[in-house]
Image (cartoon, rainbow, N blue to C red; front, side):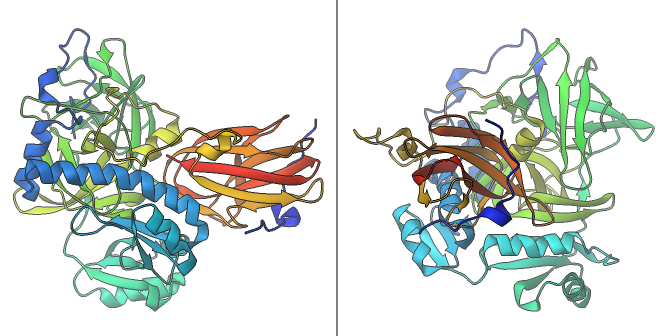
Length: 510
């Protein structure tokens, strides 16, 4: 059957209701990590020790926070899809265990409570806040004393970070960008973020840059190589390992701009492994990549300073480095120094991202930003190398097999129903709107009525506010769809190629 491009606007019917060895691809023949160094829950005791040193948490407290963080990551992603355009963001409260979820409609609070989270009624959706931030991204101008901005879901505002004495400049920037003053908070900070690489010789991996040799840190092993920061080498740059042996080539690099991400393809002498070097003689396991929410505990390692821990403070921050602005970074209160760039961030045994830059040092302290890992994987179609232990720290909700008489779509946590009364018509889900999604895997199932041919389309909103198709499932019978996507705003479109009737749509993001 010939399929036509979907012009939903004209046909929509509103539906009813840092550091090498961290993942250092070690040389072939290197011994595997000692299994005794890993706890039953998949969290290394050495990582727990670092959390105790930096965060004052004992072993039980650290395990509890990590377990809740992994649980909260999955729950908040599902709630974002379930509440659609009413979703205002999610974060862990100061105790590190209470998940709060903001919504703009009181009718959405029931779904939040049912998931085990605490609803917070707010004025602005996360999509509205992100749209305001995007306006700032496009209107940088000459605000030299403004160092960045980000969405703060806990206060339901956009925060603009400015140097002392530059509050008026920050407010003028927001006004010029068309962001209302009621949606903006100005934070004063003396810090000037910078990328964290050193032009000097030392261990872990090296690149030739600017007439000298720069040292960066490997992030996480992926099939065929490793991920790192984009400012750690342009495409085509050759890399050398900690042992001064040829290692690989930078195959993808973005910096500055939409990300600070890079991928290095290694040669046959190097074997990517699912471990992180803590620079205390231990290898920390990497079991998965469930994204932790704001407020979660997180630890990083790097070839200059080793392992330090702290808390995720904000996501989707734009940071103005001397080389240019970078969007979509995660802000933390963890310290880092030159040479730590590219190094890995873990929440328990779940990979989070790679070090981009920051301010301060590990003597006086400071803030550090990391590039989210799932964005790198989705953008470059990469597969994280994991230990296969499955984490063990999460508390996912129990799932039951589909009951007799139900279909496979029932197994997905977000459910929507609709009915199409005219062949050729289309409906947008969820509920005629869209939903916010982190970078990850979109999974959907469409159960169509007997005798009808319904297609399922997934669309993502671009920077101009237009929805573009990124995946579709067509053909006969019920449809299933899987798509690895970047973070952003998405929607499903159910299209009647022929026939009419009621349908069921199940979907989720993981």
